Length: 284
Image (spheres, rainbow, N blue to C red):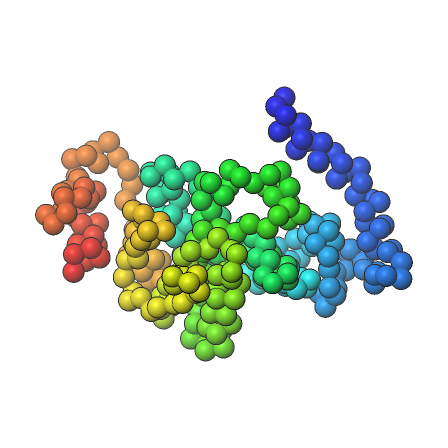
């Protein structure tokens, strides 16, 4: 058994042995802290990070995803299927780029929380999609990997998918990008805000002084630029999801016979329908 495996097992054992005493400590903590019922969580109460760690597994059945913002538990509602399908598609393309280009980073989706410790205020956010670079991920210790008790760390790239038709929604998310994700001291260098229903894209970056700004992007393929070199997010699969026209071709032994070469960039395309989409997206 490796040293790391032993450490993980010892942490799990300690958690199991001490869970009852910890629960008693936090639910009957005397006059200095208000008591709470772990089976009936009060979302108006302020919780410490240690309490957050204790209760997070106990409320996941009723509140499958939540964030800790300013000590308050914020439940995240379920997303309609189309939003989750788009999140999956973006993360799939990002994951393929990560593997094919040997970036060796980590892609997370909406249950992957990050501690955006902004101006001393702890904010554990679960973003729709993130990419954490290899050098950040490999530097994490056991507490950072397996809990939120370690030193805060943040990803390199973040994506949120939302309906921005209501201005107050867009304003709230824009503030979150600028004040939290791109706050001074975070590792975030690139952010994308998508509204697939209204075909809106906002791209967030830092200026030369490290301050965040955003610009509107046409509804077309997005380049990762210097932050994600070689990554291009193709939007035709997202358009197909929105239009309910998903049409993946079944792989066969004769695939090589059907492959076509793009006359513009010499890319290898599997079939005629994909060639049409490729030319429309890349060369129009």
